Amino acid sequence: MTNLLNDTQRAQAAAAPTKSVAVHARGLVKTYGTGPAAVKALDGADLDIHTGTFTAIMGPSGSGKSTLMHALAGLDVLDAGQVLIGDTDLTALGERQRTLLRRDRFGFVFQSFNLLPALTAQENITLPLGLAGRRADPDWLTRLVDTLGLRERLKHRPSELSGGQQQRVAVARALVTRPAIVFADEPTGNLDSKHGQALLRFLRDACDDLGQTIVMVTHDPLAAAHADRVVILTDGRVIEEIDNPTASTIADRMLQLDADPNLDTHACSGPGFGSGSTQEG
Ligand SMILES: Nc1ncnc2c1ncn2[C@@H]1O[C@H](COP(=O)(O)OP(=O)(O)OP(=O)(O)O)[C@@H](O)[C@H]1O
Ligand SMILES: [Mg+2]
Image (cartoon, rainbow, N blue to C red; front, side, top):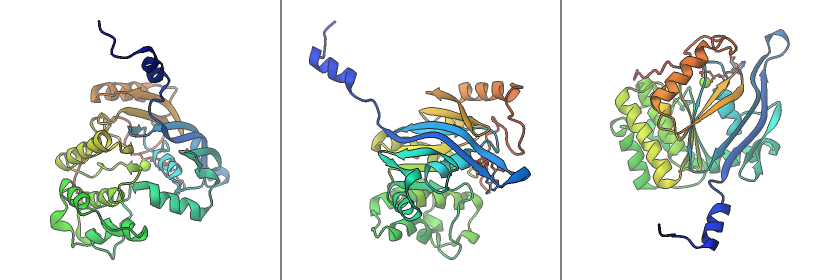
């Protein structure tokens, strides 16, 4: 067999960092409420997100997935723990600095969309550009709008859009600035399979072709299978990571965890692990 690398090149290849760490989170704790009503949504969660990778976060309803996403994106203040974004300690920043970092580096798809009701779809989508004092890249905007099937709905206000259409506007808004990291909280939860598939393929391509870093919460093993890695959260802690997941390995693991009497995966109402739901309403 021919050696393609000389000794120096081999040593360099061995020493070269794989992917750099985009998000490094350690010991995250977040409690909502006080006294007997207190809920520990995060209970010492640790997680690394590597640059240019697609991570799916799964876990039962109430396990802390949205809280974790908000913490990683600096949308919420933690009780304890540290979040590093590259070299920047997000948890040490003040409100204004966090806002600027979010605006410059992150796109966030909220589980509840958070569209501005008085603005049209188009205005909602381009809002982050205005806030950052940037102009739209027309090619990118066209690609987003067409991939997400929003061309015919751009002049409508959120109240005139279906749930799935609102969700797609929220996704376009999160991606419009081409942020370093996209956080998407159940972005396909309200989409029919056609629009869900188009969105997932788009995210996968953004990761492969543009090196986009993506963190996505989902209950759907088929959606999670588009990711490079699945991170499983229960009771506010990361309990497992699955590399190169397939829908069937994810679904099998979810069923095992659902049946594990040592894990409190039934404590909360709503979907359990394996209940992938897609509907466009
Ligand atoms: N603002 C809040 N005030 C009080 N409790 C909260 C608040 N937000 C979340 N919680 C509680 O924290 C826990 C974690 O909530 P979180 O929204 O992170 O769960 P999740 O894993 O995203 O669930 P789902 O799959 O249903 O979206 C839950 O018990 C929830 O009731
Ligand atoms: Mg949630």
